[in-house]
Length: 365
Image 1 (cartoon, one colour):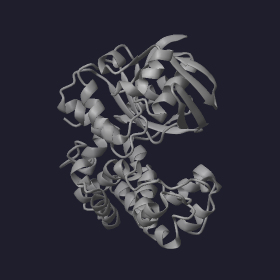
Image 2 (cartoon, rainbow, N blue to C red):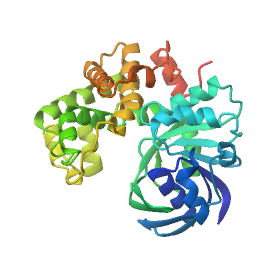
Image 3 (spheres, helix red, strand yellow):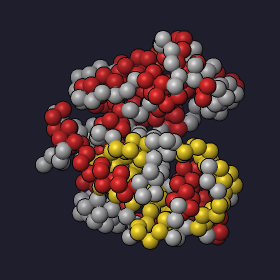
Image 4 (cartoon, rainbow, N blue to C red):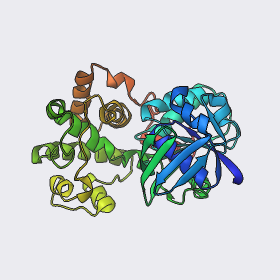
């Protein structure tokens, strides 16, 4: 057992269980937290989890609990593995129990995750000196395969991570790499947030295929059949708007086509061709319903912050706004209010210079 420090993993869904088990098998002490005890009862009973796939064995856990104070007490690294819509809630829950020197990492942050958590801790007058960071993507492709059983299908080669302010990223990466060498430093949290490619693909493809999803219950190839030339044209507009809002903040976000090439070596003269030329997308089925995280998570935690920042900086996002509007109609919810607005991110009224000072150098007074 590696006694150097303890990890707390908050969230026991597919990703949280996989990460907790992986860290345990790497020899680290791990506390696993889940809000509802039902999900973790079998793990608590077994004292850990059986892991298969990329890494195998029985992973004992030091603590399995629904008590957030118990989970974070004494943990050096707090790995938050929840839907982005749960980041505010979990930050509120743990704000009274954080300790000096702890590192909080959102896996992943989507768009604005670290900013939102930092703002919540400020609102809650948390006095502990902690580092808040976010990963650009989740490190595993994984699934729960049974009670106290999890399968890790794939481990990503590299996962960019950044802290607020950016100079603390080095400490975060050095600490994480003791267990997870795949983490690499990104310039700042604006880069991890605006390189969130799920913001481009997930909501738009789902919304534009709503009829087909409802008729077939998702029995079609999501990317290959769901992205026709017309759908791809709209995806390209969403992508351009994301990149332009990033530019208005002084960052160069990668385009969806560039990401497809770097992640999958898939290329084409346009986004449609690049998607069709990606063998990794063949066989991936659509969601069985439009009430899916591709909308419930990616609209409020990805599209809304891009739109809100764009509006504040007078960078129009008409296509993104249209997708948010359609999502509100589909779900009968007000994602504009629920989502990560500049107010919730602590950015309202700040100039570009002040935003960059907040994330790159030091916090604004």
